[in-house]
Length: 338
Image (cartoon, rainbow, N blue to C red; front, side, top):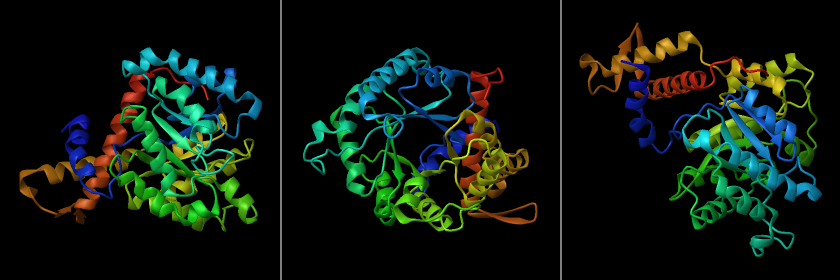
């Protein structure tokens, strides 16, 4: 059975359970770029990152917000032809400002910086909107409603950053919005810099006091079928430390890592990549369950091991990611520069 066929065959099963994730995406390396930096925007085309977060929030000074919106809108418009033809392998996410005003709450939504971001960016149809400092499920649902009211296609998804103690305490309820009617939430990202600042936790190698919070976000994401991306690593020059943190995140179960510099892309792609032996095993599991001998079975024996339907679901997801990676290489055949 071909790679494409096994991936397609498992799609319905993957989406049939409330705890399975949305269709697979490559999110090994998620690079954040200031939306008001023209050199950074131009360089994206030469990079091998799976996804780009265009930052309109913390990375842009208040006086530069309007210019950043205009620059980003023009940048996304320049990609429209390739994106419309399915020839853009990079997932494009826009981190907006908070959809809350200085007056508080959503009482003055039209005056919120985040609303201005949406008005400018939505006509260009990014892949996702990243919401900063999410603290309650109401915030995610309110933005989903705004997108629906603006007739944004269902393909425009939501990501949420969990960056405050309150957001961390509510992370399960926030993740559950991805499974509500009209829910668009696809992915969570813990914001450890803000969490550490709010709590006073000291940064240390191995993140011993932060790991429980990382696992809390991961558990919530997996409970409701979402992807989850590890937080940024702040020391660009420390390549060994970054690689070690990627390996730690991979071992914890994260799908990829949020990056602050192109120099981090290669290590993230390697850490969260697909091992040939794991792919071969996944293909064998799918083929075994598809065989006449095992038709309708929930548990089978393969190479002396017991294999269940949960292993089949993971195998299908891995093969789907491998198909996406092969398609990415087809669209971007020349080795990019990081």
